[in-house]
Structure formats: structure tokens, C-alpha cells
Image 1 (tube, rainbow, N blue to C red):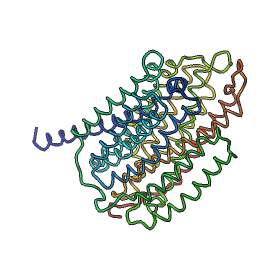
Image 2: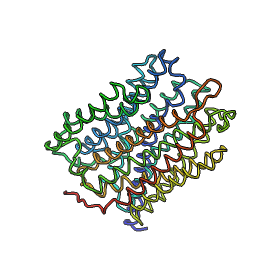
Image 3: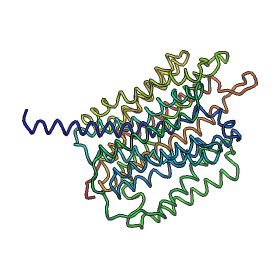
Length: 473
């Protein structure tokens, strides 16, 4: 074997190790986002607080991830991505340790906020792949990294449910911390230290603060509006604050030499349309996360529930997340051969097909599992295509920031979907032994909503124009 061939084989092995490390990092940080879902019913007694206050344990992670994402993305452009990735993971580890040690609501909230910061590993990891991997390897690697978001949730749900039911809830957080430390070590050893993409830039702290104010106001109003009342002074005040904060923030960043988000790049039609498609895909994705577990867990006596335990529900749901990772090689090949736009359209259509098939399959556990697998396969195709579209449309100096904004758009989609579905299921509920539970019509309406959002995503994706960007744009 010639030295050239041996060198090529060694380079491929190094690339494979890099992809595995980054994808595993994505799985670990996304797993930390979903750990508390099986604990929600127990949190009031664990933290000695009310159910309303305990719900902030989920909300705070969403808010922290949304605000920290663009900031971490910009840091990934200004400094070597290896160190930003390690730093993101370190913050997640710190949050996990604090959650494991917490016995009060405030300690848990601080820990969960720190865990939310870790989600920046995924967009920065994708941007790092763009700098390190050869073009032929990039599509499959991006698809695998993007799918880690779903895999972490799918694996974390049954594991956390089993620990909540049979073990100690602290183990979940200790496990997250230990895996995070392992990822930090692997990143330190395996990732290359490349020069910063934008070494002459600075972190726009005022822009970061303005973006944070707008995002927190918007996401709080959307996620808590149903609880507070959509016409309540607090909800309307937050919407008003967001409506004022975003234009003021936009004027600021347009005049800044090194903005936290380059709005001129974000306004390019390929980037703008991809981000709009990301919102609609996020809305389509969330419906299955809310509806399918409820179908599995509702009592059989309701007439439309399947009576599964919390652990069984997690196990029936797990194959969907694994399907997301299984289709990542297919997504990568489609991106390379047919382009990311075609892949995104196909993914959205598969998601829609899964939802509409679910209308006929929701009567059995196997049918619900199949529905989840089809939807998640479509999500895997779509999630791999969106970063590829973004990276084909922005200069190298904006990769981290642009990918983080795209991830934020997905989060806005899921948050909006949660609010809409919450209204649907609340309005279409039925009395079961003194408790109000979603009716069969409400669950079916939710499935139709998810399918319709996916069809809208396909239509938006079809309108994405060809990318135009260069590294020195």
C-alpha cells in the first residue's frame, strides 16, 4: 500500500472520529434538555413548590437555549470552535451537577438554565464540520449531527422514565454530567484547533442583550400565554415588549461593525426562506412529541388511550429517535446527489405522510410507534438539509452565528406549536372520572395540525431560491 493511500485512509479515520465525537456531543446535550419530562409530576414534591412553579424547570431551559444559542454561535465565529464547543459542554456539565445537588426550586432553575446553554454544541459542531471535512463527507456528517437532537431526546425519555420510576432522580443529572465530561475529553483530544473564522470581530454585548430581551419576551408570552390568559396584562405586555425590542435591536445591529447576528446575511432570500421553513418544520415536529405520548398513556377506559406506563411509553417512543439517526446517511446522500432543497421538501412530505397515517394507526401501540418512526424519519431528512442550505448561502465568517439562528428558528416553531396545540387540546377535552383529558377529536385535530404544518414547510422549501454566497462575501 502506497504512502498516499495510507495517508488517505488515516485522514478518513480521523474524519470519522471527528464526526462521532461531535454527534455524540449533540446527543448528550440534547438528552440533557429532555431529562426532566418524566419528572414533571414529581417535581412539586421534590422541590417543595407548586406545579405551576415546577413547570418553569422546563421553560427556563428553552429560554436559556434560545438566548445563548446566537451568542455561542457568534463566539464560534470569533474564536476557535474547539474551545467554544468545550466551553459549551462545560456549562452543561456544571448545570447538571447543580441540578443533581439541588433541593430547592431556585437551584434547579439555575442548573436547568446552564444545561440549556449546552444546546449551542449542535450548531457550532455543524459549523466546525464545514471547516474541517471535505465536501464529499459534509452532507452525511451534517445530517448525523442534526439528527442527534432527536436521538438524545428519544434515548433520554425511556432512561429518565425508568430512573424516575425505579431509581433516584439525581442519577439522571449525574449521568448527564459524567457523559459531558467524557465528551469534553474527547473534544480536547480529537478536534483540530483551527484559526477563528472572524478573528477581527468583537462580541456585541448590547446586541446580545437586546436580542435576549426580545426573545425572552416573545417566548415567555407564547409559552405561558395559555396559563396566564392570552388577554392578560402580563401576556400582552410581553408581546408589546417584544414588538418594541426587536426593531430597536435590528437598528442597532445594522449599524454595528461586528453584529451578534448579521441581518443583511439573514435577509438573503435563501437564508430567510430556509429559516421560515425551519419554523414550520419545528411546528410540525412538536405535535408528535405532545400527542403520541398522550395516546400511549391515556387510560384504555377513555376509549382512545392505550393505557401504557411511563416507562413503556418511553420504550414505544424510542424507535422514533433511532429512526432519525438511521436516515441520516440517506439524508446525506440525497443532499450530495439531489441537493439540500430537494431533501428538505422530501423530508417535510414524509413528516406530513406520517401524521395523516397516524389518523388511522392511533388505535394500537404498534401503530403509534410506526407513526412516530415515519414522522421522525422525515424530521431526520429535513434537519440534515436545513444546515446544508444555510452553509451554502452564508460566508464562512458567519457559519456559527447563522447555524445558531437556524436552530433558534426551530425552537420558535416548537414553542409556537406547543401553544397552539395546548389551546386545541384544552378546548377539545373531555371529563374522565373528574379529570379533563384530551378527547379523541382533539388528538386527531392535533395530528392534522402537525401534517398541515409539514405541508406548509414543503411549500416554503419549494420557494427557496438557489444559494449564493462565497467565503469572502
